[in-house]
Image (cartoon, rainbow, N blue to C red):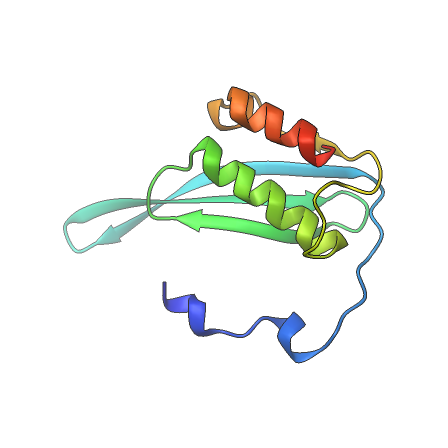
Length: 117
């Protein structure tokens, strides 16, 4: 991807990890764009910390997102909020989403449970 070369703000300065109130909201959407005569779809999913309304993580793809993408988003959200060594949330986290197939897939539900979501 073109954005892979951009440094993260965390690379420039060491930011303290913020506390979370324990509620994250997750949603995904498709964005239509026109490439000449071809219509393409981009998909974006993001997590919002309901305490401070910050988006600690998102994932984007030029294809429809899958359950594996949502599981990656769950991991990235925990890492962004609690540090990259985090394997499980330090306290109970409520992960709110709709009932889309990406969220209700058995692997996604099991992964969320293992992460403490």
